[in-house]
Length: 141
Ligand SMILES: [Zn+2]
Ligand SMILES: [Zn+2]
Image 1 (tube, rainbow, N blue to C red):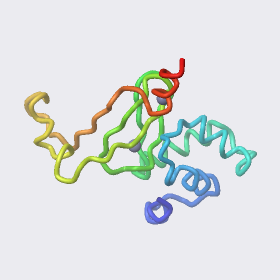
Image 2: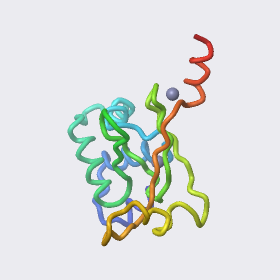
Image 3: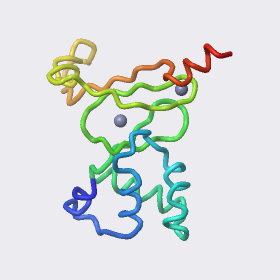
Image 4: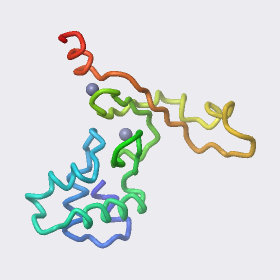
């Protein structure tokens, strides 16, 4: 992701570098607020608005993806390849689900339910249920 930031033509501001470093490789799909909290020690003078706007800029440049998995704030995903997500009903955790090679993400896979004339670029599914740790809590209570 850092390499892509360098080749994206975006100016390498300290904020952008710090945010990219924080987001790259993060598989938890953090919200802007979560990133802001984590960055408060690295970027103590940076406001939430700046972090939020920077994330928007990065998303526009294709360096990360803005995702909404339901109610609540949007989440940021450093994984820009098509992939599915598993979202926990209870704690809201979001986990990447890789698409098996050659299936799922191919345009033909989603054509049946898509209106005529719509060109499918990718198929990304959201699986909803309970994550492993929440299933454990259900059994314990
Ligand atoms: Zn959970
Ligand atoms: Zn993801």
